Amino acid sequence: MNPRDYVRAVRRRWADVALAVAVSVAAGWAITEVAPPGPPPKTYRATAVLVNPVGAPTVYTNLETLAALTTVGRVPERVARELRYQGDPSELAALIRPSVDREAGVLRITATDDQAARAVRLANAFARELLGFLGDERARDLAEQGRSLTERLEALEAEIRDLDRRIAAAASGEVTLLQAQRDAKVRQYGLLYESYQQLAASLTQRVGLQLIEATAARPVSTGGIQAPRSREARVVIAGLLGLVAGVVLVLFLDRFDTKIRTRRDAEERLGVPVLAEIPHRGRMKRRSDEVIAAREPRSPAADAFAMLATLLPLRMGAGPAASPDGDGAGNGEVVAPAEAAGIDAGERPPAKVVLVTSPGPGEGKTTVVANLAATYGMRGQRCLVLSCDLRHPKVHRLFGVPNAPGFAEDLRNADGRPVLRWNLYKAQVPGVLVVPSGPPPPDPGPLLSSPRMRRAIEEARGYADVVLIDTAPLLTTSDAAALLPLVDAVLLVVRAGRTTAEVAERTAQICARVGARVVGAVLNAATEIPVPRYYYTYYRRTSRKVRDGGIPHLARQGGARQDGGW
Image: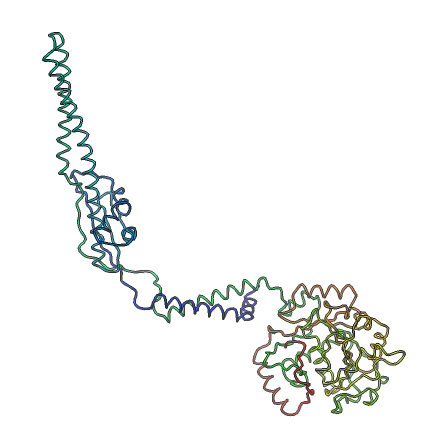
């Protein structure tokens, strides 16, 4: 895809992009309700410092261990008791960030809070409770060591007293040995007693860390990109993010879209040139029973049908000759049998027969037939429309003629008689003859593949310069397939945004297998026509003036739905 294709994809799915923007704006508004707008809250930091003075005796030299003890275990619990905090002590620990400067022998405890006083209290509380915890743990260890030394000293005193009694009662030969044992016990006692005195002296020693309490907190600089605090800014940013997300989503979905949307897509899938691109007409501008080529002959759609009417005979190899007298206007009546209207089938050369079909229903083939016929008629050429869509006929509605009796009844009853003799009607568009299909028969297939159908086509060649056959969709029934060998050319109609690439390729394969001469295609309801918009504006203005000046249009039956979507 080139950049132009990306732009077309976004324009085609603008509703999805608009939905993404709307959802994002609503989400931004909801977030604003949860976090009310206003100035950003200030944050304060206070730092308490624990210093290990150079040369001072200390028990703790691993400052990293002390930093870890600050936020876990007993220290946060002691702080919560001191501050009378009722919540989880880990919540207080989350407001603390300890840091170590090993070279300087410094442990910093930094507290962050939205109030300066609380930040100071928190930093000092953690520092004090850390020292208190270390002191309590050290005192507990010293007390345990003191109990052990006391027990050993008491045991040595008992042993020394026992040796004194034995020396007093011993013989002269044993006194020397017992005295040596006593001296050893006395020396051991002296060493333990010295350790006991050192332990007692250390009870009065501090941990060795000096506390420098925080006295004031300083505001924290937010820095970097800050989230907007005003409601308007949040909504605008949410809308921009939604726009980006919508565009990305649309481009992603477009990669998996197999529908035919452009002339290039249609020509690639069908294997034939697109002879006309019928522009899309909005639902408010469409009429269910109008032939736009007659009602608005200066409109973009009418111009597209005029292009189709010009290119179609060129693709068939010869152009239809104009009517010698140029008189093909209707007489104002809705219907007229062939003989009563003075229609003569023997005064003109055989006409070219074009079968118009589509892959599926609702793609606009009947609309194309009616408008193409009206275009030929207003050019002074006779055009006969043969309705062979015997299942869902609609041509009679567009031209304002009755549908009973019709072509299906003629095919059943024409035993040796002309098939089109009594059900050939003049439309109110100049030069257009219509053969309605009549009420749907129970089984249209045998009628369309019968020899009478072939004879009807040969008869139709003598009544007009161009014969247009409207058939059922090619992939839904076998009706159109039976007519493909009988016509001079086949015109395929596909609808932009509805016909898929797979369906179009299947249609082209069927036409190729039966040897149908597909001369071109029509892209109906096209939205991506490379024509400047001011051209359409000009056409709409001039079309309105011409229509108000009395251009003839068809009588409408009211409420019938037009086949096609342009």
